[in-house]
Length: 614
Ligand code: CA
Picture 1 (cartoon, rainbow, N blue to C red):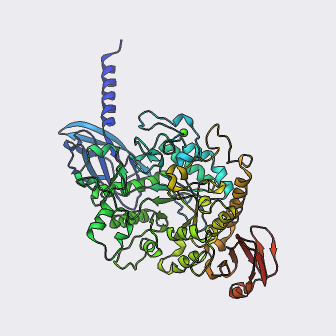
Picture 2: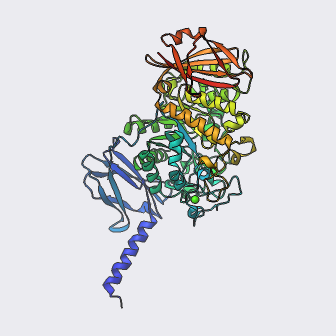
Picture 3: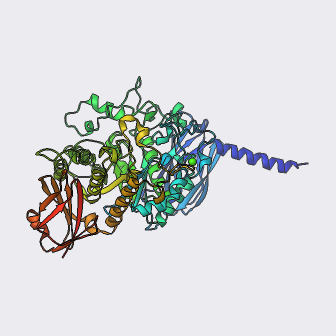
């Protein structure tokens, strides 16, 4: 027999739980000691707008409460003063004197630890991986209750089961390879009915997709990576969200999304944001058009949406101890919003790095988005890093063409010659390939000699190098065949895989050659300051040979590419300015001493790196 008072307590506890279950408060927690003292809570719950929130906690004040168009939302503006201490406070949502709902809000103490929020720089090499396709560390989470799409490894556009545990399990491998930063395609929930594997249709900005793991797992990944000296870049998406988001059928305000009478796709012409002659029609379509039917275009000119996105970014950085951000589709949201977003990140983390996906063809177009004070229209982005798409396009051509007046390695030379357009060309991220295009080995026509030239170029040119998972073991794939083909499973990442390319024994001779070459290059780069930070001097390609130097007052590295099908004898007299004071060198790739500085033979279709010695 259960006593009545006990039953009452149990029932009232259940009632409270059900109340809490009914409301959603975001951000779900926050920190004391933030530079920006304000916090805007977005509260969602049935008819929550009839309530008045109350907080009784030292240092935390409700400044204002704003109702939305939908009765199911409230925005609560808080001021968190210096007097606020870490702890938990209750937010009571009252209607007259009755508490309709309550929420235990956690304020954590902000941690100041130099091993967190590290940013990235020229000493780093970034490894991009797609978590669904890298390694399946936990087959039990491949299918999860409540998730619309089930795992299907036979479907190249389906979910394959890769997860956070798979990444943690292979941190040793990445350390051995010599990369220093892992950029992971989005890990947040994508509860979409199909093609949810790529992660760019987020359906919960505060939750890791359960098929990848939990928020705690993500945090643990960052911790484990930091223990190995590896950093983590989170892939964020401010432009659009998945149409299966809980708010999709009950938007706080109609203008939460950029709305059109009928579905209107973006024209994908990022240049319209900088074009002095752009028509309003084209600009509007670029910025307000939807990226895809399944990806709703978020309206960052709605101040609540803007604050939601900004706080979400700060929340993840602080929660995870995150080192950097890659922001998707950078020229698609309103550019004034993106500048505000950047400013808020830099306010809290002054040395932070964000690399923007400015996928445009010319250096001038990309340079507009890298922070500078000289844009023609006065726009200042505050963006610290951009990807060098123009240089990647040049790389795609250079080693596949015979050098000529306007062919071959001249493509590289001419793109680099336009670096005067960038406020700081060292801040560009140079990539071999990424998840949206042909893989490096495919672009190099599956010729390992050209693959090596591409790798050496990427690792020794100015900027911050980035490679794409599996490139180091010659994974191939053409974008034209479908995105699944450039995002295949890493062999050995799944239990029962025929071969395990994470281990030497599991690699084919070709894979091992590429892996060993890449590892040698990366491990050398890791310890070589001049190739990381040194000045860059290039010589016009001559006779099919392209030469440049990375140098400072103390050291110099000479990089050569023979882009012909014959062994070439290179006459060094042209480079005397850069060779002055150096008597010999060490070839990094062959480990041989170079003692004759007059003439040197470079084998056909080969790179050569010579570390100069006094
Ligand atoms: Ca799994």
